[in-house]
Image 1 (cartoon, one colour):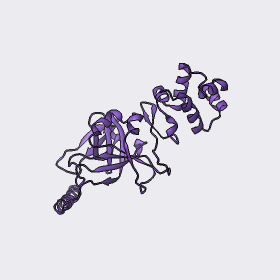
Image 2 (cartoon, rainbow, N blue to C red):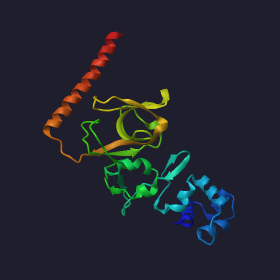
Image 3 (tube, rainbow, N blue to C red):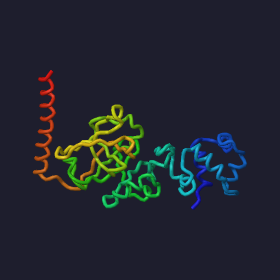
Image 4 (tube, rainbow, N blue to C red):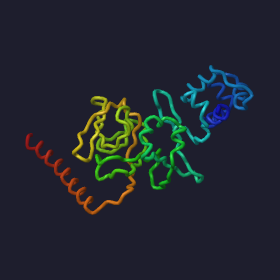
Length: 258
C-alpha cells in the first residue's frame, strides 16, 4: 500500500515545517506539496529522491510503511541512510519494549532493519527502565553464567559507538555471528575491533571488527524464566570468587615483575 501522501504531511509536521517551508527546503512549489499531501497527484521519482535525501529515509520505506506511528525522529543509521526506529508507546504514552522470541531469534538478523518485522514483535512494559530505546533478547547457552539459558536480556540501543564502555555487557547483532550477548572490551581506537568475552571462562574470547556490528544494545536488566537452584547459586558464587581471585593474582604478578 502507498502511504506517501500522509507520510509527507506527517514528516513535515515532525520538522515543524509549513508546506511553504518544505517546498523551500526541497526547491519545489508549495502547490506541489499540497497536491501530493492531498493525493491529487502522485509524486515524481525526482521528488521522491529529494524527499528521501532530505529526511534520510529510503524511498521504499516512504512508500510502503505508515510512518505516522512515529512520534518523533527516532531513527537508526544504516549505510548512510536512516531506517525508521520508533519508540513504541501504549495508549498512556508509556514506552513499550519489543520482545524477540526465542524460536524466532535466528530470523532477527534478516529482520532487524525491517519496520514490518519489528512491528509484529510482542511488546511488554517495564516502567522502571531509564530513557532510551529498549528491546528484549533471548539468551542461549551457558557462556554468560549465571545468566541461564532461556533468560532475556533487556538492552538499551547504543546510537553512538563512542559510548561503548569496556567491561560492560552488550547484546550485539553481528554480520557473521548473529546475535550474541558478551562482555565487551572496546579496542576500536586501537585496531577497529571489539573483543568479546564470556563470563564463563571455559569459552575463549574473540574479536569482531566494529564494521561487522549491525546493532549494539547495552545491558539494562535481565528476566530469568527459570528459578535458580541452591546448588547453582553456590556454583555461581564459587566461579565468581575464582574469577575475582584470578584478577587479583594477575595484578599481583604484574606488580612483582615491575
